[in-house]
Image (cartoon, rainbow, N blue to C red):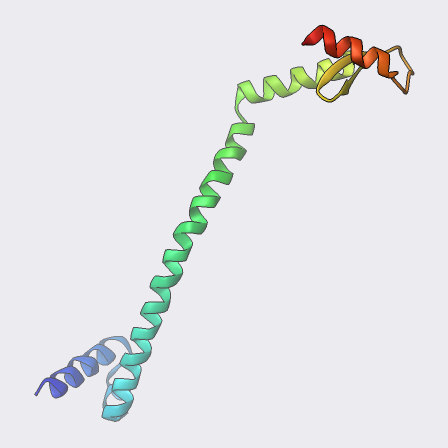
Length: 121
């Protein structure tokens, strides 16, 4: 019958993986239970790999961003921006508008902000 064939196939798998002594000492129910456990384990592994595909996509994007930071043009741009910020310390930004200030000046009056904003618009 099909059950006997299934049991024999499962016992053959156990013999090949675990050895003769385990395959012969197990009852038919224990052999079927091991097969059921193996099926559940395979299902869980397939679910985990499917979830891993989504996770690996995010990891790929992260890795691409990190590699971009190592490119020559990116490093060049960052160094240039840092240099300009260091050299040009008398520029303050208010609502994305660059306003020139005197060295040590902490506040900018509203009239100056209005005139610079109007000049850039």
